[in-house]
Image 1 (cartoon, rainbow, N blue to C red):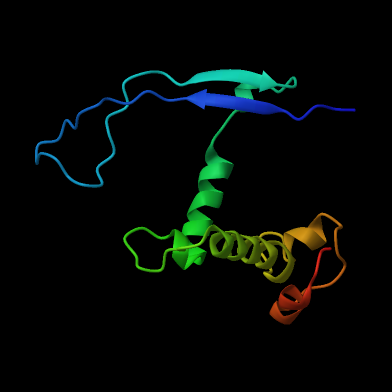
Image 2: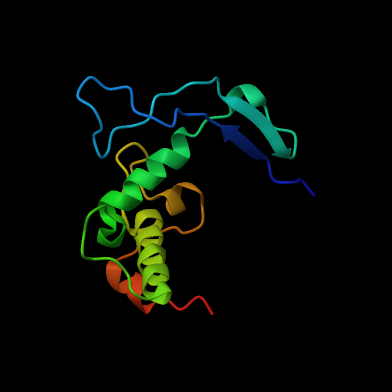
Length: 128
């Protein structure tokens, strides 16, 4: 059985802002060190380590799930509500949304399903 390939990336940033305008609330801190890449498990190719896919998924979630956007009142007061919102997003993203580059849903491209799901299918689906 193959082990999962799990990698870690450590980026070191400065503790202060070097900015001519001074402190700005959402300014990124200056990058001060090279990226340290390390293998946590498995035998991955270290040259291919990247956070691009994870960062893209985080951006997609923040744009599509109102509860994840910054500076909003639409936050989840209950953890169960947040879990349900995230699960619905991933189900829609993978089963009901046609992606332009794939020309189908990710689930169809992976062979998990052979048809396009509707939102009604997602709401009625019971995995247990």
